[in-house]
Length: 447
Image (cartoon, rainbow, N blue to C red; front, side):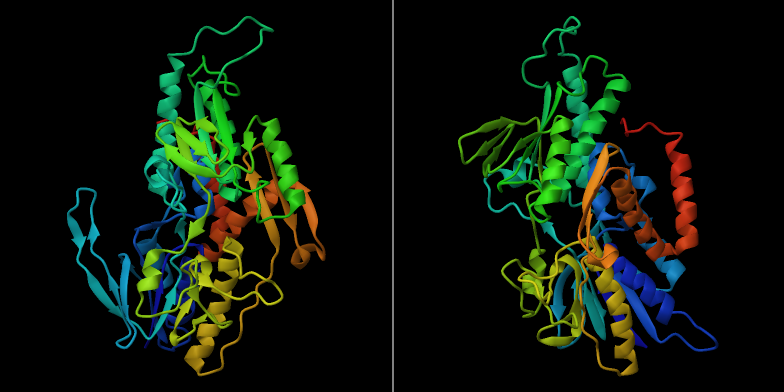
């Protein structure tokens, strides 16, 4: 049988492995399976990456949203191998995986090699610190569940410590002055930074209702959003950016625009203009880059961002047996100066495209070319609101949306991801079960 290996269990990689398994790895109508599919990821579980800001704010318990790769593989006919991609031998058509270790450093799985006929790389992206001194050491990125959980625990600990340092409340009507007791600095006002800032404002309000009675959630928990560019959400339209900025300022989020961070030190963030921003916790959300391993894969060409250069068929430029998509691939976007953007909707479209293209490959047919359709962008501001724009593929134009409708559209994105993995019937059951679970839990995770 033809051997497919998909490396990377993110939104696109897991969807592709699931659909390939359903279509080609199961006996149908008396026919034997046509292919074997192996999914490789360095973690044992999957979580939709756009949810990590909610995990960091405590408004989502990651363990209720994680999906076991091994279970998904069992249900959909493919195989799962845990391990980190560390090398590639294109001539022998083999990939090398590193050893898997437990929390104490003991080896769970040894280094291995896996043979393939067709390799699909979808290993996503990682945080780009741009060489800023102290950024990697003194700030927290939100690439993984472990990082999001680390931030959440540190936030709760900082609020609990501040609880016992707060003086008695001022008399009614008195002005509130002074700096916040706890201040969070978020570097980077893209979607992750903006969504986290709004979600943290909600968390601060909820924490005050669950025992931290001396903390004023608006004045004692400060949130500073620092952006090097002239506006927030630089990848989106100016209308969306302006509407979002107004909503954040109403929530009490302080915006520092056109402020390039030059150093992240313990407890303080320095900017090029000379500002020193106090920060009890610092989150780095200023940019992404491709994983370094891509530049070490047996001569596969990469661009200046470290992404694999691919043709319109999503095949790498020098090897027809290797495909790449999602954040780790640089794919041309005809009619635009830039490549296909690193968004979840692009990874989903490419996964659907590859399902058909790899079917053509099995049948010996020519491969089609991928065309990206931009359906717009949405940014969640927690339970307060949402804002975004819908593009021509949806409404035949470009329309700014916000409020309840935008929030419903944003929530539907995750539900569509669940439907792609499990089908619509199970998605509906999962939605109902999630709603029931939330009725018996606090609005934020408190421990």
